[in-house]
Length: 97
Figure (cartoon, rainbow, N blue to C red):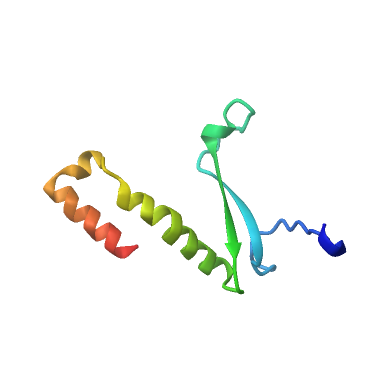
């Protein structure tokens, strides 16, 4: 590393170690066993970065505002939410983000 700085790896649930720097998170929404064949379908992951001491909430806000909200705003096909009633539901949802 540059100038002898050591990288550190923390594995935490966040209750004792404050969130700073870069963090990689993994999410699973199924109790299925994870294998090399199904990991890409069963596990989602992402990276969060805490800048200027803004912590986990600031990192999540940044992820939402820079990635997810712009992606949702560009969405052109909303399936069942393409109706007039669906348009109201979408507008209400987007207004709460």
